[in-house]
Length: 433
Ligand SMILES: *Cc1c(COP(=O)(O)O)cnc(C)c1O
Image 1: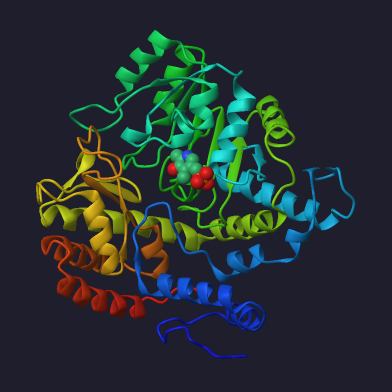
Image 2: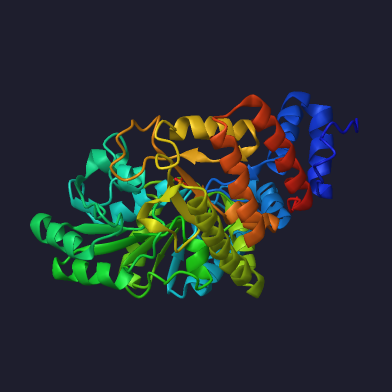
């Protein structure tokens, strides 16, 4: 069965084609869904700041023999036999992670960024301990203290906030809050913050109040690994991250440290503290992704991500939008839609843009008067488009496409016309698989 219903816009690598043929014969329902998703990714512009397109090597390492094995424990100390090659691949992943981030210890087993935070919090503080963090409404992550999350359930959360004028971190104000609440742990690192983080300033605050500093670099890990954003080392006691955002690896988590005592605690809290068997196929793919991130090409890629974000930000400002904090230093930006059109909401913008083939997420802006499911803003990021090969001029063109859709309030005719322009642009920049 070799019927290829994938649109002519989609060029798949040979392993992907084989997978679809196999599924076509065995499970046409799933085959159809995967084909549609491959088609969607190939023919739309992905501007969600936390997403990326992995290489064929990373993608296919995930779908490999390594998934068949239980490997509870760590290399050399497993609870199951037959782990020789699992030990090898986990050691390789750990070694590459240490090299990539310039630190002494890496735990590559966390299933996700949130899982990495669970284990790191358990390692660094007792239940009920006080965490000082930026709330989700101001750009933090739900695992940093949102009430219904484990973090808000089991710890005492105190918020710091961005400066109301500059919409940037105010280190003096954070220090003052730290002196008041005397936290056990301070978190820096965010999901929707477009400016450089001063890790040394955070460490000075942590030292003053005798707190642990945790840097969650989930979004900026690729930029950190390539030297495009300053490193949390040697300032942070413990560093958590995802592996699938700017780092462009498989969906997963990672915990790093330069302190042997902390590393030992972290290992115990990942397994058996918060997880069972590691996802060894994902760990194999992490090793592949870390290998890619150690190449000079990855550094070039990360520089281009930031250059592209700057070009997109300037162009959107030119079209009359306001960027929170006035701009971006990294891969993302928060766009305040109201100066362009007082009635325009993030929810409408997201829905209209999707019909035109431009994929974004609505996002609250600092002190957003609208509800989280409506919002006044969009969060836009350039990691995925940069993977496709788009450069500054192309991002300026993307800003033009976005503005055409929003200026027309999602008019179906305009969206359909932009959809065709988006398809043409996607054909010029094919995906890696
Ligand atoms: C994305 C993100 C996470 C969580 O990642 P998941 O893999 O979705 O659990 C954690 N922290 C920050 C700051 C993030 O942006």
